[in-house]
Length: 545
Image (cartoon, rainbow, N blue to C red; front, side, top):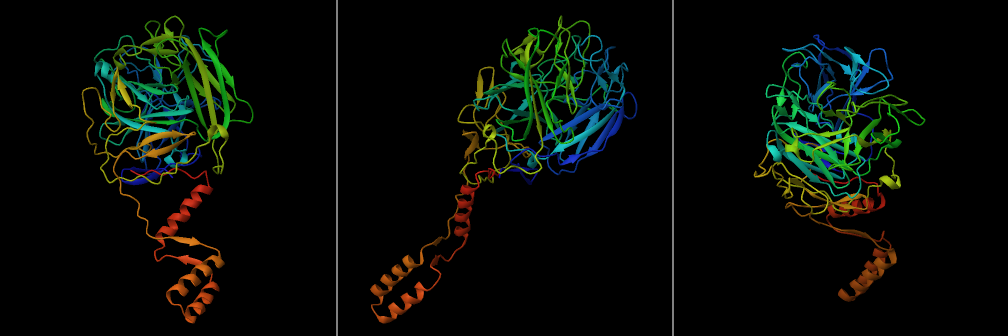
């Protein structure tokens, strides 16, 4: 079992994907009113491994839009925008929809880009139903790779981070969570850039942009102007709310996601598609929107980010007639997904500009591949996993450390975990260029580990990268055949005693149960435990930190 310590509480990951621990009731939010903000008490007790916001029009149950990790627009410009921004901690999830602060009242809960973006329909809803789903770490299978890294906005070229996961194949699932400063608040990374061309020092916008391939996770931090790691300020919720400029990344990667496989499909979209792709239908049976998990990714097929996967999003935040922006917007239902693409003349499916990561790996491209994966939840984890998703448990026992929580990183093999434009940080010393990682008073999120992960046949073996106390072996219990025990007892007693009494004692010993038992039973328990692990190959890994 994989154990994490989050805010002093042991947290274990699971062996498969299960239904969310918490699902809220439906709440109606309305933009530009006092109903533009809500808080949901999930009471999971630990920082969630996954939070999903489901946004549905009041009169259209077949269009569920996901929430958005950060605002990239405020109310300073007279142009429409939309979405539901969210953040969370170990007790609550807070959501915001647009509400004028000191500018224009153009924001709505749902917005698909009007006539500027191409899609199956135009949607601009001021009111919508919102539901929150929360998965605890035990609801997800153990990640194959996890790491942390400190981040800071406005650092120029140092605002780009490249992490080596080294799994050798494109992961089925990746999460990037951002802890806000020294607080317990968390927001999620994004895969789009929709900032306005008129962004200035007075504009509020933010986000952590990421993408991944078979060996790396790339992360772009806002590097110029007023960009933040997270923003819900100036045009969201009932007050000005917040921006956050420093924090810690928590990255988790699943090589194979052990869920009940429901759907998997790829399709060419963008400039090389024969037509504009607006919908994709699931195969039967229906997708469980109450318990299932959906991954919609855009794979770049050219340019400096070729073969990297960017996550799609749930709302349009820029539909201006000029200026460049990018991303892919989607909604889903039990039967399929709907897609909205940016304008071809100045919008892009893959877009990274010089306001992010100091301009590292800039790209403006409409050549892409749509990649959709969906899993329904297991009610009971299978005892054996499908061949393509088999996770072989390591033989290493629990790794323990009494060291204080620190900002640390882990990676498969011995490769560097992070590089910033040609510079690398070594294991357990992840840092910004020119800076040394320091002790962090905040404990790591579930999924962060101080151990080196070594991929073995689709699973992980754990190589301890810090000193730990050796296990103590205190006793032994071995079952032998009764006759072997008898003969050994006879020979021993005859040699020592050489008397008839020895023979009598021997006979009495033979009539016993034939079990030689040491005084201490602790080692017996451990030995039997090893046997059990050997038999039940689906047993989960064990880490503790």
